[in-house]
Each structure stands twice: as structure tokens, then as C-alpha cells.
Image 1 (cartoon, rainbow, N blue to C red):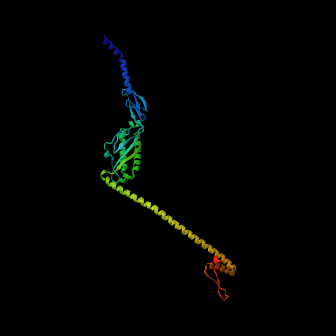
Image 2: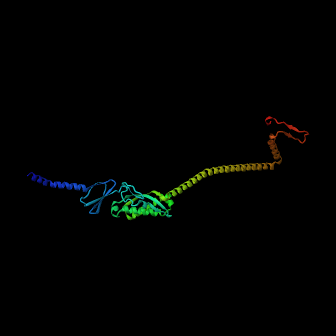
Image 3: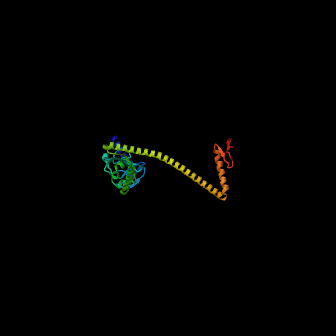
Length: 315
């Protein structure tokens, strides 16, 4: 009797137990959370019906609705020629990094190129449904673009001066083809990491590089010496030219002054020749006599010389 009573009690509570289990299953399969850096693409029976923003969301359980979380705010990256593991590189690791980084340049030389492509998922619906495996497609496109751009340049440009140009051109080509194929991705940057000659010729390349650096150093030193000596010589030449021009101007002014005085004297002479002649004679004597040690004045009518004593202070 007690057993029958317990069985009846359990049967009476069975609907509640079933309802509780259904509620637990509903919550477990019908409630989900969308992270702050992501969107949720909602499919019902495989058809896209909605794209939901971050927060707590609900869907029909039991496999009716399917949700795919897409990290649209997170910067993702693909690595080429090497491999690291973190949350920004969850897709498509390289199958053979060594083969991937081996490149042939435009002058038929070899180089080992490692690079990174950083990108965002720009449209979650397009990303999921327009192209199958968009990361694989992006990886193939990136490798093709880098090989094409590297193949247009010499090995010296690839290893030294042309890195930024390669990054810029590869980025532009990738953006064009990603837009054309409508992958739902946005290319942020293309960055070359390690660009080296193949290991068997690494030592020879380093030696050539050192020689080029020494050459540049000698050229810079020569330019420095040139910049020191030439301005100094130019300054000295300019100084001498200025002095010569000043002396020439002085001589010209003196000559013009002498000419002006002679012209004025000639006019006076033409007016009164005898007076002018005598004045010139007296002025000349006045200039000459003070510099003589002994002065003798001769009078045509005198019989003897009359010495002139040199008085102190010229008096």
C-alpha cells in the first residue's frame, strides 16, 4: 500500500518534472550571450534571419535556430612564413611556413619573406555566406600578391630599401581584390616582418651589406669635409673680392677727386695764369719745405747764401 501510494505521488509530479527538464533544456539551448566585440548571425533551418548585437539573446532551441558568433570588432591577422598562436590568429595556420616564405625576385635571386596581414570582418553576413572559407581565400590572395610584387623588384630592393613600397602595393592590391570578390573583410595593414637572403648566402650578403655601409660612411665623411672646406674658402674669396672692390672704388674716387681739382685749377689758370702759377708754386713749397733737414733760399740779386735755421716745432 505504501509503494502504491509513492508511485501515485511520483506519477502526479511527473508533469512538473518534465516541465522542469524542458525549461532547463530551453534555457541551455535557447539563451546565449553575444560578446562585446562580436555579432551573432542567427539562422533558422539554415536560412539567415537576423544579425544580433552584443548582449543576452534568445533563440528557438532544439536545433531550430543556429547561432554563429562573428568577432567583427577584433583585429585578426594571418601570418606567412612563420606561426604564433593567440586569439587574433584563430584561422588557417600555414601548412608549410618554409615553402611559403621562399620568394624569387625580379633579378632571379632568392629571398625569404615573412609578413603579416591584419584585417577586420567588415560584414558578418557576407563573411559567412558569400564565399566559402574566406580566410583560406584571403591567405591565397595575400601570398599571390606578395609573390607578384616581390617578383617585380630586385633582391637589393626587397632586402633593403623597398620594404615600405612592397607593403603599400600589396595592401592596395589586396584591398581591390577583397572588394571585388566581396569577402566581407576589410584589410587594415600588410607588414613585412623578416626579410632575409637564403641561409646558404647569408654570410656573403652580410659582407656586401657591410661594404655598402662603409661606402656610405666614407661618402658622408667626404661630404662633411666638403661642407666644412668649401664654405670657408668661399667666405675668404668673398672677403678678398669685397676688399678688392673697396680698394678699386677708393682709387676711382681719388682719381675723380684729383680730376675735379685739376679741372678747377685749369679754369683758374685760364683766368689768371701768373697768379695761379705763383699760388701753385707757393703751395708746393709750403708742402715740401717742412720735410727738409736743411733749407737754402737763393735770391738772384744776392751774392751769398742765406741759411734758414730749422726752428723747434717747425717755427
